[in-house]
Image 1 (cartoon, rainbow, N blue to C red):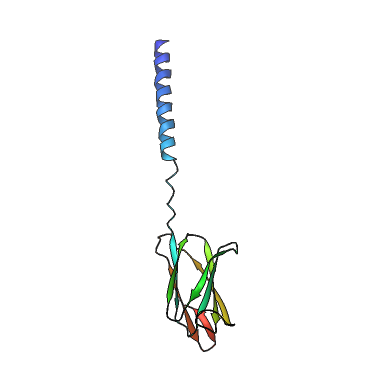
Image 2: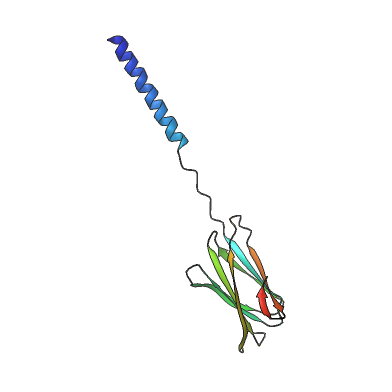
Length: 130
């Protein structure tokens, strides 16, 4: 009888150790911290551009005028969500006047926090992001 009690006690301890070992192996890893990124927009076109940045749901996140040769850094964008960057090429350097060309590009943020750089250029057929 004593031998059976000792055997049961040893088995109970071994089962508890095994259960704790399995728990330790199946714990969830710590989440990767979200690092904010920037969308850097350079205007290499021959006109000013009105930039509008939309989130994945179509809401406006940022907007503003970028004059010829200037660049703007729009901050606090997070991976892995895609964003749409729209450029409206305007007739005047203060973004007033009529829109002469409208283009857009979808960008995705890297997880590294390094940001995304795009440039608006004029081509033979219009204005496009590169």
